[in-house]
Length: 183
Image 1 (cartoon, one colour):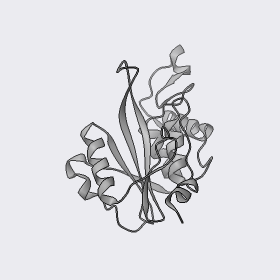
Image 2 (cartoon, helix red, strand yellow):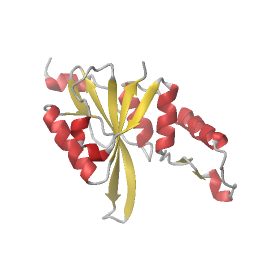
Image 3 (cartoon, helix red, strand yellow):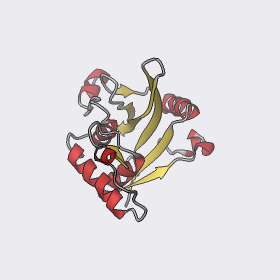
Image 4 (cartoon, one colour):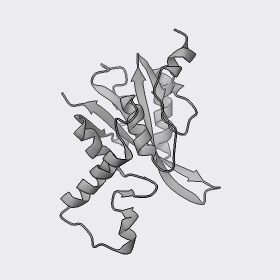
């Protein structure tokens, strides 16, 4: 099968508002609506209810909630971890000091489901700074960058290119989260 045809068969959600975590998770699971805005909102609300140190309510709390913005999305890492745990996955925060070589990128596909990155972004000439969720996933032996800002999945040529990419995102302050199957 030609590489272009393989890319067409890969599920890839595109960016809408600040729902990059939603798109990133669905891209990770390779299925539409594995996660929905409603399911992530429930995870975020459950985190607030379970927090013994929850803050006081203000009129801004309707929109700017502790773990997400209720209008635009923009979910935080706690929602990511809670949502993945509900699906039987475990998240391991990669220690950047260990370097990329500490990640087993060529191991069994049933162990490491994928990698979720939280990368710093600057928009509007650097006036708007935020972070963006990106999924990397190995599918049929090929690693893909499933960034929802990309028009289509980007296949890495080989593991060496993937390592170089990971090194570069770590150098600019990205967080690397390994998603493993909890067996």
